[in-house]
Image 1 (cartoon, rainbow, N blue to C red):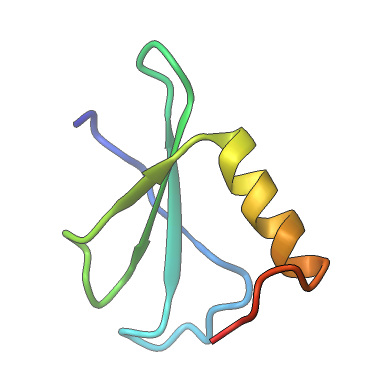
Image 2: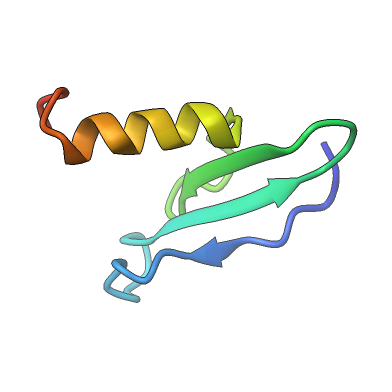
Length: 66
């Protein structure tokens, strides 16, 4: 995996272990990487299109939030 520069979500409280972080890589195709700061080795990888679809479905209420 390429070196990733992680950015914290503006909705994170800033405390340790409570931050969602995001990074992008462009090796060939663009990929979005997501992780929680307290589990830095557990990384979910997706594409911008798929992530936008998920966020749109959440905002529209088509997917129940836990």
